[in-house]
Image (cartoon, rainbow, N blue to C red):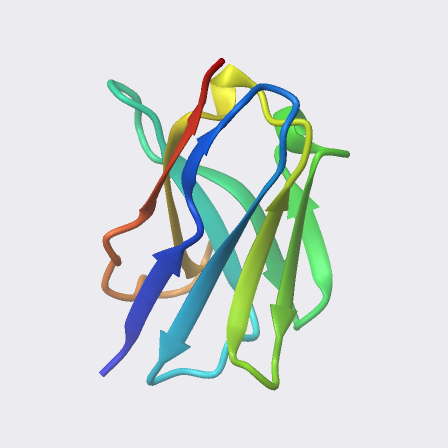
Length: 114
């Protein structure tokens, strides 16, 4: 049974940094994505990593966010730098686009505010 558990969210000031983690059980992390859902908006892809190392980011986070997988820990990370109020959302991890969805976790809330 696949289980994804996100953590690391919190309240951060604009321009600050945060690191999100996604711990998986039941699967080996290889091609995955970070998604987010802001209030009143649809869930959107933020970044994905395929074949263990090929990365893709949406334009609004390029140069600010970094996605990575630590295979030894079977954990995926999202390093968020220079955060903006527009980054406020619940962040989720799941399969990379085009793959079969795993059960969604609870997500982790990121709030960017002064």
